[in-house]
Length: 268
Ligand SMILES: Nc1ncnc2c1ncn2[C@@H]1O[C@H](COP(=O)(O)OP(=O)(O)OP(=O)(O)O)[C@@H](O)[C@H]1O
Image 1 (cartoon, helix red, strand yellow):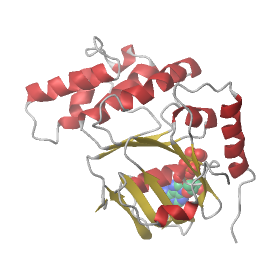
Image 2: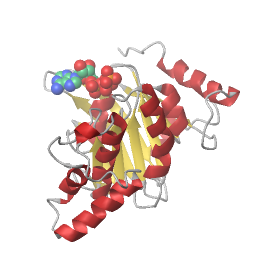
Image 3: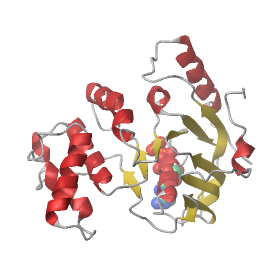
Image 4: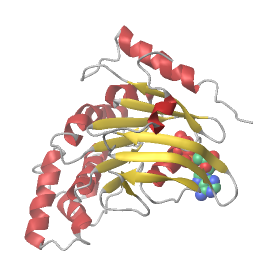
């Protein structure tokens, strides 16, 4: 581990600032007894794009669901700005791997859906939805139905829908996985600016198996490995954006991530 990495145990040390999202000593087993995590710690600071990587099946999606309050850990807890997260809350938005838009609704109606449970009048809801669509680059496309949109546009609608609920944190599970490579590249180039274009969104946690994508986007990368999984490394990425994957520096980071991932580590 080099000076660019955090020491894993530093995450438990007292800090004067409260992190936006924090997972503390999370252990979790599925009902069938399969123990997925042992004492996992993760921290997402203000303005930070955090990525979680790890071998296939290690528990990345499961961890994101724990962070969002959708699954309850056996021990440990999740905190949003110092407060316990005990169930799904509007302040934490989960964007799924598969792009979820309702085919019978326009882009605008799909986004307005996220405000249905809030007591917002129709006019304000529509204004907010239009703003959210503009933020993701879909101004002028409000009346299109999903079948009239590309996969990339549909994913932008899903992101706009999450924005319209005014969350503090986005949890994104492989957000580019179901897009063709060109579309994924376009969205990848835009996403950082879309997410942090104003300071309403405080942190992003993304799960991905694509190490290049992770290095293009993330400030901090948490590497899960082992059975049960724990955090085997935290890499802080100190490269200006936009990042060029064709540089030696970028490749140096890639090598570092590969070293943490291979071979998958087994715990006794
Ligand atoms: N409902 C469930 N009951 C029991 N085991 C489960 C359940 N859901 C997932 N698992 C198991 O838990 C482990 C972690 O799954 P998870 O989907 O979180 O991994 P992942 O790292 O996101 O995988 P991938 O990279 O392939 O998407 C896997 O071994 C999976 O088979």
